[in-house]
Image 1 (tube, rainbow, N blue to C red):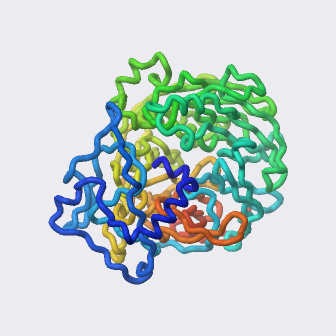
Image 2: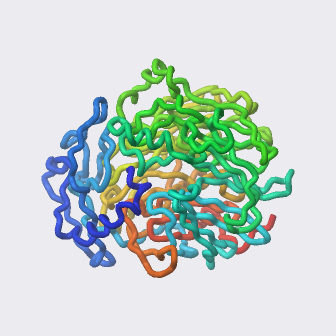
Image 3: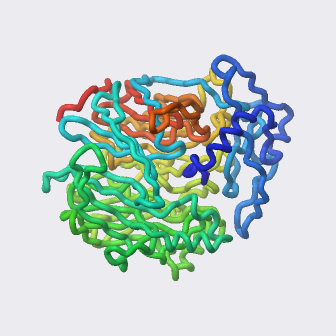
Length: 582
């Protein structure tokens, strides 16, 4: 949902809602529950006796559907079956915000913790983003450091001892007077003998543009926004960002001149792919012609760009690849997509290419998740001439994010990649976002092999389906492969799963995946304010929004709305303390 990126803006309202929630009846967004003969009740017991009330729906504002926008699902076609304990997702929904309770929703925020085949090795009550944050990590002078950050702030930790990690710095950015922070990858460049960071910058997805179809002045504000829509390269000289040495800055807009305050395009989306060698891959719209997308609060349809950064002071643009239909003038191709005109779907990349083997080491293929444009196999063996070799039109899943993440960590041994979107709405008021296993053993003929199991709660939980637990339910990502140290397990794949915490898929038999472990924290809690002056109450909708996997230390870091959990599981092996031996 949109406010996942603007949690702090609505925090005051939500705090009030939590306080008065018990005075406001929770009503379904439509009559989905009326078809049930029984009403669901959830007595407060154990840790939930004093659990916070679940927030009510947002104040009803008149929402006039735009032409082509999906209608609210009809009563009785979706919802929770009290008799069977199962939830049926809607087949399609319009974009929506806030709680969407139904007959079956818990009236409180579950304070229980559920754990199977995992152990909590540590907990740190710091939060960089309630609904979203990125991570970056690097080793320097015998220590390991972790950045957990958003575009407006970061926390820096020394995690050399994961059971006794220390926050060593934080910074807030006033983006009215200083440049925003951004997603980054930090790798050691052997040729240069230096630690190099690449950081990208993107126009705001939320908070400035609410609806491009109805608010032309907001569209203009994005286009005229003064910022670098591209990337900077730094030499990392200390654990602290403020000490790093700027080597270069590059706009994705090929016509932008150095120092131009206003540039075209989106800038760089999400964590860039850089291996510490010659090539850099970034997702982005390099100019305003990349604009064929439905999403209300975004102007651009991102493609995939390649750069030569062997000299990090002078990056060279190599190529831009995109799907026919993404650019102005390609509307005939665009309109072949069944999502055309729905005013809801994200069309284009949200993340750079997913590359299992670097080009510099002989890698040939990258895999692209292109939103509503589906799954693509791209030949990147010559980054000067990237070309698609095959693709799959994926099943529609509107609203919510389609085509966001691809896990490629097992493809070299199994021939399988794992493709998914993620939920944007709350209370499962959208189709479920499946994780698709795609067989790419023949890269010219990829095929969907299966979907991974949908998580189910343990039998002692006060709910029978995670849709009842409130907030969002579904996969987010399996961590950012570009920043996760070590060699990935070929049989284990952890996933952040919002209100279902961390779900660990066991892929020993790739044809019969199972959920071999999980850790599901409480729905809400208190975390330390950035200045350490006291505790603040978390927001509810995204209990676990991100994970970071240390393959070389057999640890999973889970980033929740109330702090950071450090987890181990026998599926990965015994956790390693200190830096692993090289």
